[in-house]
Amino acid sequence: MIHLNIGSNLNSIHGSRINNITIAIQLLIEANLKIEKISNFYETPSYPNQKLPKFLNIGILVNKNLNLLKLYKDIHLIQKKIGRIQTKKNDPRIIDIDIVDFNGLIKDSKDLILPHPRAHLRNFVLYPILEIDPKWSHPILRKNAKYLINKLSQKSRIEITRLRKNVNIHQ
Image 1 (cartoon, helix red, strand yellow):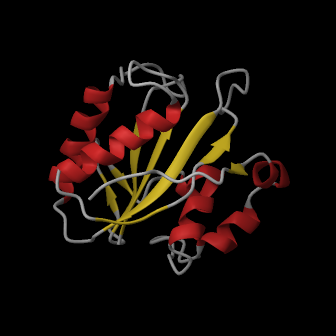
Image 2: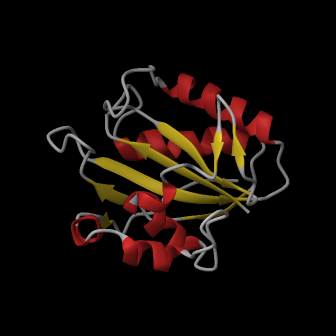
């Protein structure tokens, strides 16, 4: 399966962080992605500067019959449509869509590294995966999300909040 993670820590002309993420999902659907599952929203402090606005993130599980290059291009186009501007690493952003895992593919190119190189270190990636795909295993480390969460620092495990909110989409 394909795992994507979508995050936002800035409001936009579209409204709130929730609106930004919801619009991103709607645009992914319009780009012919078949979404299997969507996690609840998770809120975390910004990293590394916790004075910046908090992030909202969700994980989505997508049907595995996709072309990687088309998905990559669609994601960049969607981020641009929503209003993302390339800034410095870790700066606040309206939308961020990452390919976490693409059918277990291991790839390291100038444009794309799979699985996502820091997925196993990020609470906002691991908790949504645990929620929507508990049997998932990291393609390189061969460990599941629960194991990887237990390897996170205690601070990282307690600073994440699962919101009891879901994305409302129409496929």
